[in-house]
Image (cartoon, rainbow, N blue to C red; front, side):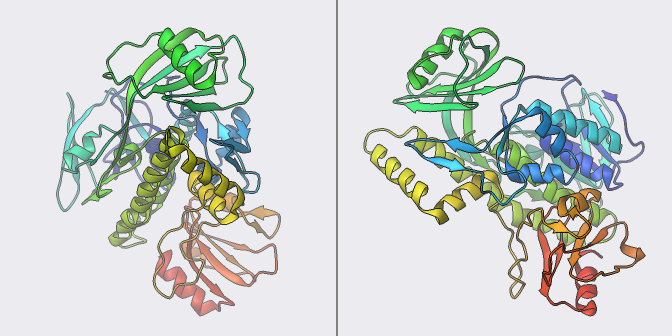
Length: 480
């Protein structure tokens, strides 16, 4: 086990797993002044193996709120249109977001910027550190590490993937099923360049997807319905070529594979994302088919939802029951992502009588704006909102776009301090006692709505023509 950087002493939070979800969560907590240790069983080394290849608008907005999106935009490649089946095209150019596109880049590029931020914030990284289990009591959590001393913490978060040791340790089931068996992955060079940045198609029993790494290699993901073999069955390049030819009509002259593997894709979700002082996020909480590229994106948004709540509770600015809202807000989103990604892959692999149904659906989505907006909102993540109390303002729980603020500012720049942002028409002084957790801003327009935006970019409270006592009451309730 080796600690590479960060805080010393007892961590207030231990995060298990250093994928994108764990890195964002740990970085947020450290930036908020919470001592956090991140445990990872793998040795510390840069990997170019990646299943995730896209960032959607909502994940990019969350990264923008941390000052990271522009760096990723510089290395990724944007796509403003997603071509699916039967002529169905999702045009992202009209998205109400600064990021009206899908950004194509491998997961390891996302991990690099998140790891750098986490290290700079003071996260205590411990690689070669395998968690074997944990126990908890009313005062905290004890994390058991193979070959090392037990670690004590106030809260623990499992971001350790589909085979989560943390999830098993708290006794949570992972119900669901295998949706696609024997998916083949390969990183290859191509003699012929595809016509589009992302290439995908399904013909008969074959499906194939191509995406560029940016270093000359392409990731191939392909599947043949009739070939159902165990994950440990060897893969050779001829199999990859054959399935790709069946699905895409040619194999683009694939050669020099540097890596090949086989896996199966499951649809599963834990019934609860919290057991006492232990939380689950990302693939430890939910897994689904890769259709729509929503896996990494959903995990990043889990982390953004949980991090500010843990920080608020640990700093004493919020009651512990705030942590219950992580389940009520994120579990329904995970369930919807599981269903929508499953629907996409089933439609892509339709056959027989299902083909006319798919064609009719594609036509409807192409011509019915409300249905199309809903589909785009789910895939990109910007269409989700969280439950609001009865009688709350209609904006409560809604995602806030990157609105302009007075003086040439914008909301997601104001969110970079990890604070709430209060947007008013007239200047409002919230007082120095909240300066560490609240930023005040004014509308750049003549809008009269007062909006209190949470650190994750959703509306905590809003009111029309609010007076100072109303604002103060809202701040006391939500900011502390």
